[in-house]
Image 1 (tube, protein in one colour):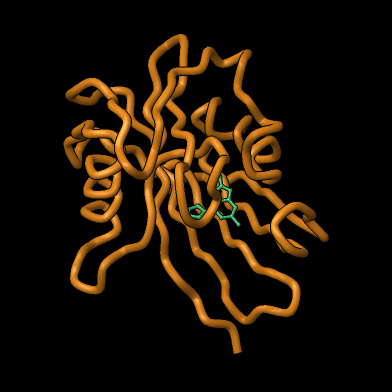
Image 2: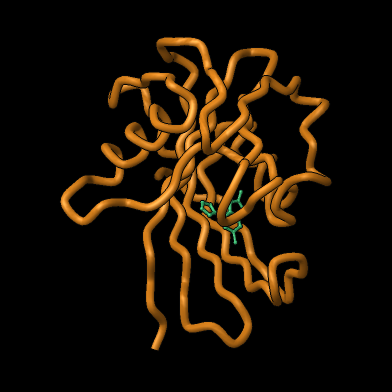
Length: 158
Ligand SMILES: Cc1cc(-c2ccco2)c2oc(N)nc2c1
């Protein structure tokens, strides 16, 4: 029986670049990713996304400026845990990203996204996010550096 755990990922964007953070510890350490993490029991997905973003790079986004852009489901060979990741993007935000204990933030022009230093699935669904096309992706990993099978589909809306 699969155990499902909810996570958030937030990507800040300008018309020329996307903000990624280098994870400094824990799960996904040394990979560039969006900002996010677990959802606490008594908070909404939006509240969790905004809390994690602020905790990880000290940037604030108003709930109305957070765009729900996708959903990712990750499963792992031999493990009942399924990670249900809600992906958001924002182009309107307050504050300048700064390094925290968790993340080292950096702006990447869209033609310089460091996919070789990111989760393998990112190259498969980033094109949808960068076009503003809502998506639903499912990835079945063997360990953390091999995808056994996957699917990504466009959604009419998120
Ligand atoms: C297996 C996996 C997990 C995550 C994750 C953990 C917490 C939030 O996201 C990923 O994030 C990305 N971009 N690929 C990912 C693959």
